[in-house]
Image (cartoon, rainbow, N blue to C red; front, top):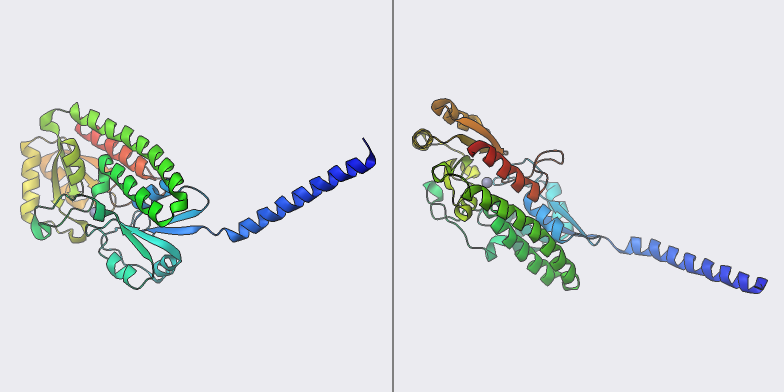
Length: 302
Ligand SMILES: [Zn+2]
């Protein structure tokens, strides 16, 4: 092999690496991640699983553990929102604040509830209004995935393949949890199928899997327990011999402990609905949240 030829090879390799090296630096500067903003942590996590590549970043306005219904957006929330290309919220009146929040922003908005069939609240001042907590049922969670895949594909058609592929993988995981819920409840004696919670946030779960839902107040935004409802809950827990009652992670257990003390039933634990837990908590993703809820309900009612 001649010296000239070797020099030529080294020269070419040098060129190649300097070009690819430069290219890498320049793409790094060019590709700024596009921001997708969600109203709450559960929704942000579902979106993160669908828009899961280097082109997108997903943030939630409300942080883990925060009460979402009556949240008050901060100035930094508005700054975050102005950098996003889309704001995705749940709707059905869940985020009381989101209408006003987006009204001053030049931003696309997608509301999941626009494509969902609601279950209506039947009592108190919320009578006739849709119950917002549809994601609490894994069956509806699968619908959330379809809605988000479709919306993001319309907004960013070049990434349609990615959204669809990720959506399918994610839906398989949800289907497994859906089957676990069905199996558990089908094996539970009929007279034990009572889910007693603080907020009436489990209507979709109760409806989809055949549970009777009992709660202390219909929606967090108005967590006023009337003496009538308290008396009714206590009487039902006694009459049906309900083995455990539950509350939610974003509210105080205090009122449910009154039911526990009055009836002698046990407190089954906190369920997660409106917000995920922090990273080291038991519900740090939507899938973990559903699994945790199933586990807590199982432990309480079996
Ligand atoms: Zn709620």
